[in-house]
Length: 235
Image (cartoon, rainbow, N blue to C red; front, side, top):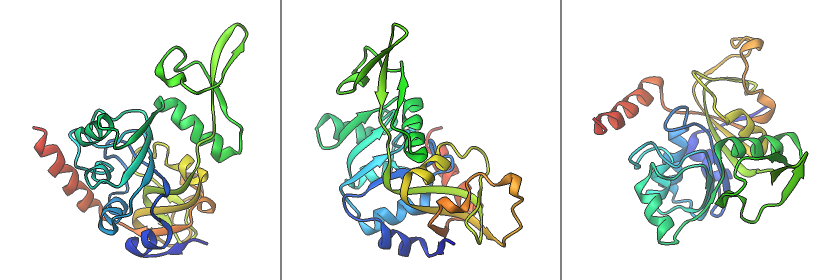
Protein backbone atom coordinates (compact mmCIF):
# COMPACT_ATOMS: atom_id res chain seq x y z
CA UNK A 1 0.00 0.00 0.00
CA UNK A 2 1.33 3.46 -0.83
CA UNK A 3 1.83 6.31 1.59
CA UNK A 4 -0.51 9.28 1.32
CA UNK A 5 1.42 12.46 2.05
CA UNK A 6 1.33 16.17 1.39
CA UNK A 7 3.55 16.92 -1.59
CA UNK A 8 6.06 19.04 0.31
CA UNK A 9 6.40 16.33 2.95
CA UNK A 10 6.97 13.68 0.28
CA UNK A 11 9.61 15.71 -1.55
CA UNK A 12 11.40 16.56 1.68
CA UNK A 13 11.37 12.90 2.78
CA UNK A 14 12.55 11.24 -0.41
CA UNK A 15 14.31 13.68 -2.75
CA UNK A 16 17.82 14.72 -1.73
CA UNK A 17 20.54 16.90 -3.20
CA UNK A 18 22.22 14.94 -5.99
CA UNK A 19 19.23 12.68 -6.69
CA UNK A 20 18.58 11.22 -10.15
CA UNK A 21 14.96 12.07 -10.94
CA UNK A 22 12.64 11.17 -13.78
CA UNK A 23 9.78 13.58 -14.44
CA UNK A 24 6.83 12.42 -16.51
CA UNK A 25 4.77 14.35 -19.03
CA UNK A 26 5.56 16.27 -22.19
CA UNK A 27 5.56 20.03 -22.78
CA UNK A 28 3.21 20.71 -19.89
CA UNK A 29 0.87 17.77 -20.54
CA UNK A 30 0.55 15.52 -17.47
CA UNK A 31 3.58 17.15 -15.84
CA UNK A 32 3.62 17.06 -12.00
CA UNK A 33 3.58 20.83 -11.55
CA UNK A 34 3.15 20.84 -7.76
CA UNK A 35 6.07 18.44 -7.31
CA UNK A 36 8.27 20.77 -9.37
CA UNK A 37 7.08 23.78 -7.37
CA UNK A 38 8.09 22.01 -4.14
CA UNK A 39 11.53 21.07 -5.51
CA UNK A 40 12.04 24.77 -6.21
CA UNK A 41 10.70 25.85 -2.82
CA UNK A 42 13.00 23.41 -1.00
CA UNK A 43 15.98 24.29 -3.25
CA UNK A 44 16.92 20.65 -3.83
CA UNK A 45 19.97 20.94 -6.06
CA UNK A 46 22.57 19.05 -8.11
CA UNK A 47 19.80 17.01 -9.71
CA UNK A 48 20.23 14.68 -12.66
CA UNK A 49 17.01 15.32 -14.57
CA UNK A 50 15.67 12.62 -16.88
CA UNK A 51 12.74 13.64 -19.09
CA UNK A 52 11.88 14.06 -22.74
CA UNK A 53 12.13 17.87 -22.97
CA UNK A 54 13.22 20.48 -20.48
CA UNK A 55 10.39 23.01 -20.59
CA UNK A 56 7.23 24.17 -22.21
CA UNK A 57 8.22 26.44 -25.17
CA UNK A 58 9.77 29.66 -23.93
CA UNK A 59 10.98 28.23 -20.63
CA UNK A 60 10.00 29.38 -17.17
CA UNK A 61 7.37 26.67 -16.73
CA UNK A 62 7.14 23.03 -15.58
CA UNK A 63 10.64 21.45 -15.56
CA UNK A 64 12.06 24.71 -16.90
CA UNK A 65 11.75 26.15 -13.40
CA UNK A 66 14.43 23.73 -12.20
CA UNK A 67 16.89 25.28 -14.67
CA UNK A 68 15.76 28.82 -13.82
CA UNK A 69 16.69 28.20 -10.18
CA UNK A 70 19.99 26.45 -10.93
CA UNK A 71 18.94 23.09 -9.49
CA UNK A 72 19.98 20.86 -12.42
CA UNK A 73 23.50 19.40 -12.66
CA UNK A 74 22.86 17.06 -15.59
CA UNK A 75 20.05 16.67 -18.11
CA UNK A 76 19.33 13.42 -19.92
CA UNK A 77 16.72 13.94 -22.61
CA UNK A 78 15.95 14.49 -26.26
CA UNK A 79 15.62 18.27 -26.60
CA UNK A 80 16.68 21.44 -24.80
CA UNK A 81 15.79 24.07 -27.40
CA UNK A 82 12.46 25.02 -25.83
CA UNK A 83 14.24 26.49 -22.80
CA UNK A 84 16.52 29.52 -23.35
CA UNK A 85 17.88 29.27 -19.79
CA UNK A 86 18.89 25.63 -20.25
CA UNK A 87 20.51 26.41 -23.61
CA UNK A 88 22.57 29.19 -22.00
CA UNK A 89 23.62 26.94 -19.12
CA UNK A 90 24.62 24.21 -21.58
CA UNK A 91 26.71 26.58 -23.72
CA UNK A 92 28.42 27.93 -20.59
CA UNK A 93 29.13 24.36 -19.37
CA UNK A 94 27.06 24.87 -16.24
CA UNK A 95 24.82 21.90 -17.05
CA UNK A 96 25.95 18.59 -18.51
CA UNK A 97 23.67 17.34 -21.28
CA UNK A 98 23.32 13.76 -22.51
CA UNK A 99 21.29 13.74 -25.69
CA UNK A 100 19.08 10.72 -26.24
CA UNK A 101 16.49 10.47 -29.05
CA UNK A 102 13.05 10.31 -27.50
CA UNK A 103 12.33 6.78 -28.70
CA UNK A 104 15.67 5.54 -27.40
CA UNK A 105 15.09 7.38 -24.11
CA UNK A 106 11.79 5.59 -23.55
CA UNK A 107 13.32 2.25 -24.54
CA UNK A 108 16.14 2.74 -22.03
CA UNK A 109 13.61 3.45 -19.29
CA UNK A 110 11.58 0.41 -20.37
CA UNK A 111 14.68 -1.78 -20.17
CA UNK A 112 15.32 -0.66 -16.61
CA UNK A 113 11.68 -1.29 -15.71
CA UNK A 114 11.77 -4.79 -17.21
CA UNK A 115 15.19 -5.76 -15.87
CA UNK A 116 16.70 -6.02 -19.35
CA UNK A 117 20.33 -5.39 -20.21
CA UNK A 118 19.67 -2.85 -22.94
CA UNK A 119 18.24 -2.42 -26.42
CA UNK A 120 19.79 -2.37 -29.89
CA UNK A 121 18.67 0.53 -32.08
CA UNK A 122 19.90 2.04 -35.36
CA UNK A 123 18.79 5.49 -34.19
CA UNK A 124 21.77 7.77 -33.73
CA UNK A 125 24.35 5.75 -35.67
CA UNK A 126 26.72 8.19 -37.34
CA UNK A 127 25.65 11.13 -35.14
CA UNK A 128 26.85 12.66 -31.86
CA UNK A 129 24.43 10.28 -30.11
CA UNK A 130 26.80 7.35 -30.71
CA UNK A 131 29.67 8.92 -28.75
CA UNK A 132 30.85 6.54 -26.03
CA UNK A 133 28.35 3.83 -26.96
CA UNK A 134 29.03 0.32 -28.13
CA UNK A 135 28.23 -0.50 -31.76
CA UNK A 136 26.99 -3.96 -32.63
CA UNK A 137 26.47 -5.27 -36.15
CA UNK A 138 23.47 -7.52 -36.78
CA UNK A 139 22.72 -8.83 -40.30
CA UNK A 140 25.24 -6.33 -41.73
CA UNK A 141 23.52 -3.36 -40.09
CA UNK A 142 25.07 -1.29 -37.29
CA UNK A 143 23.17 -0.70 -34.06
CA UNK A 144 23.88 1.21 -30.88
CA UNK A 145 23.58 -0.55 -27.55
CA UNK A 146 21.41 1.71 -25.41
CA UNK A 147 21.80 0.76 -21.76
CA UNK A 148 19.03 0.74 -19.12
CA UNK A 149 18.17 4.07 -17.53
CA UNK A 150 16.88 4.09 -13.96
CA UNK A 151 16.47 6.74 -11.30
CA UNK A 152 16.30 7.27 -7.58
CA UNK A 153 12.96 9.05 -7.89
CA UNK A 154 10.14 9.23 -10.44
CA UNK A 155 7.76 12.18 -10.22
CA UNK A 156 4.65 11.55 -12.29
CA UNK A 157 1.18 13.02 -12.62
CA UNK A 158 -2.14 11.18 -13.05
CA UNK A 159 -5.77 12.18 -12.94
CA UNK A 160 -6.91 9.73 -10.27
CA UNK A 161 -5.50 7.26 -7.77
CA UNK A 162 -7.38 4.82 -5.59
CA UNK A 163 -6.37 3.83 -2.06
CA UNK A 164 -4.21 1.01 -3.45
CA UNK A 165 -2.29 3.43 -5.67
CA UNK A 166 -3.74 2.33 -9.00
CA UNK A 167 -3.66 5.19 -11.50
CA UNK A 168 -5.72 6.45 -14.39
CA UNK A 169 -4.66 9.34 -16.61
CA UNK A 170 -6.57 11.96 -18.54
CA UNK A 171 -5.01 12.01 -21.98
CA UNK A 172 -1.68 10.34 -22.62
CA UNK A 173 0.44 9.04 -19.74
CA UNK A 174 3.51 9.49 -21.97
CA UNK A 175 6.36 7.51 -20.33
CA UNK A 176 5.03 7.89 -16.80
CA UNK A 177 4.06 4.25 -16.36
CA UNK A 178 7.54 3.10 -17.40
CA UNK A 179 9.17 5.69 -15.15
CA UNK A 180 7.15 4.43 -12.20
CA UNK A 181 8.56 0.95 -12.77
CA UNK A 182 12.14 2.13 -13.39
CA UNK A 183 12.64 4.24 -10.25
CA UNK A 184 13.46 3.22 -6.69
CA UNK A 185 10.73 5.53 -5.33
CA UNK A 186 7.73 6.83 -7.28
CA UNK A 187 5.86 9.90 -6.08
CA UNK A 188 2.54 10.44 -7.82
CA UNK A 189 0.71 13.75 -8.07
CA UNK A 190 -3.02 13.34 -8.66
CA UNK A 191 -6.03 15.58 -9.02
CA UNK A 192 -8.31 13.19 -7.17
CA UNK A 193 -8.05 10.28 -4.72
CA UNK A 194 -10.93 7.81 -4.85
CA UNK A 195 -11.97 4.67 -2.99
CA UNK A 196 -10.89 1.21 -4.09
CA UNK A 197 -13.22 -0.11 -6.77
CA UNK A 198 -14.04 3.30 -8.23
CA UNK A 199 -11.44 2.80 -10.96
CA UNK A 200 -12.46 -0.14 -13.12
CA UNK A 201 -9.66 -2.72 -13.43
CA UNK A 202 -9.58 -2.42 -17.22
CA UNK A 203 -8.96 1.35 -16.92
CA UNK A 204 -5.91 1.08 -14.65
CA UNK A 205 -2.88 2.38 -16.55
CA UNK A 206 -0.25 2.21 -13.82
CA UNK A 207 -0.73 -0.54 -11.21
CA UNK A 208 -0.37 0.51 -7.59
CA UNK A 209 2.53 -1.89 -7.01
CA UNK A 210 4.85 0.62 -8.72
CA UNK A 211 3.72 3.69 -6.76
CA UNK A 212 5.19 4.44 -3.33
CA UNK A 213 3.65 7.81 -2.47
CA UNK A 214 0.38 9.44 -3.54
CA UNK A 215 -0.02 13.20 -3.16
CA UNK A 216 -3.00 15.41 -3.86
CA UNK A 217 -1.86 18.00 -6.38
CA UNK A 218 -3.49 20.97 -8.01
CA UNK A 219 -7.11 20.67 -9.07
CA UNK A 220 -8.05 20.30 -12.72
CA UNK A 221 -9.08 23.97 -12.78
CA UNK A 222 -5.77 25.05 -11.25
CA UNK A 223 -3.86 23.11 -13.91
CA UNK A 224 -6.04 24.71 -16.57
CA UNK A 225 -5.43 28.20 -15.19
CA UNK A 226 -1.66 27.63 -15.16
CA UNK A 227 -1.68 26.39 -18.77
CA UNK A 228 -3.86 29.28 -19.95
CA UNK A 229 -1.47 31.75 -18.35
CA UNK A 230 1.45 30.18 -20.20
CA UNK A 231 -0.40 30.00 -23.51
CA UNK A 232 -1.42 33.65 -23.24
CA UNK A 233 2.21 34.79 -23.23
CA UNK A 234 2.83 32.95 -26.52
CA UNK A 235 0.13 34.80 -28.44
